[in-house]
Length: 374
Image (cartoon, rainbow, N blue to C red; front, side):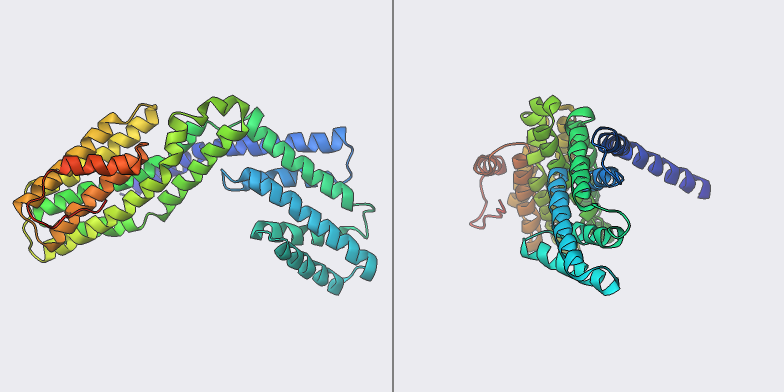
């Protein structure tokens, strides 16, 4: 068991290394080029600021590099301005350094800067306040070096070594969609066996989805950024990448609505409500639709199979509703409808059309209660 766990850890670390390989190459290339430009071409004193700025910009969350680079330059400008002015007025020393940092952060806040701008402004002010006594005329070269580093980082990510947006978003979306599909499968089996603890375990696991959802949202931002900045990726601004990037929000909604579905499943089982055979089948079909969505997105195909399977889930939920369900059962039925509608929107269908298709697949209502959650 211990050896198996060790191999699993090694495999996970190797997967993380492969996932980070592109970023590592980008950072190394940006650091080397920015040093060469700052030192060899522009002859900037203390050119170490250029590779540092390049790496800081690249270390930003993928999908926020353009914004982070602008913030980097703004923070440097504020820090240089405050640091240079106060050194001229009050000199250098411990209390002067503290005052420079305080005023740099205050100035960044007044300019509406983000935490990144505040940190960069304060860090620049510290460097100005501590290095200026021993390195003359540091202020302008520091600003130019930061500008070089930021520009080189953008050039590397946009032109020299751009990430493949579809591969990037596929890698991030797969864990979120697999998590959703797996827990829906567990829930369907829990319904068949009336296994409340299993359904509760599925609910707990699905609730612990912040990492998967954050990775999907970040990847969607990255896909948009890469396809906008990189000339070699401009053709991907439409088609599979654009559709996948827009899918992040409805997939997040599908996970939240599925959480409600599973929570009411727990209550349904605990209250010994009736469970028509078609209800667990509907939840299983919803899980299968989620897996098909991931596969069809990954291959760049139109997700027709995912849509058909999701509608089959709604049809099964409608049959279960007409066969007779209790209060919690009607909520489960409603959430099958709602989650299906979310998945349809994730495939690029407009919300109104998704709702129409879901209503059509559900079929007639046996009573006046709607059971509709879309």
